[in-house]
Length: 182
Image (cartoon, rainbow, N blue to C red; front, side, top):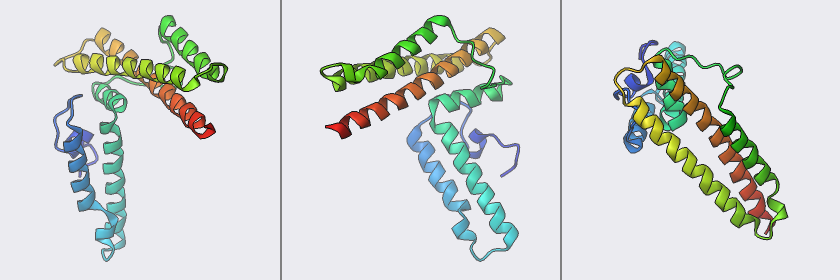
């Protein structure tokens, strides 16, 4: 397992946004089985350390490839697109307004007669938006070569998806609280 190996190479997969997640999971289990530290319990200290490092690298690569948002970001990074999470915050104003409205709606759930129903509608809307972005990423990343404008647009989609994933987590947290209150 060379250091310069990409996550796709590690799993012997082509660089592609479209992945068969069951195949990826099987490849992950096979790789983890081959490098897991338990298999090296009687090996030298160096071999045990290398095993731990390899297992961590396999786990990290798997976590990135199984997530559409992280996978898209990784593919763009392979194409020399840089991400700076502290500075890359310039999203379009309409999208940012939607995020504010979503957060306000989540904050006002308890003011409704049927907060679970309202929350289910919000969660469905978020899911639909994520699905649309995944499809846009699938189409955009299928291109053989991307120009700078396309890379910039795809980078924006990755950032939007990151916002929506966080919003989805917040909605799931709200749902858990509402269900526990029943």
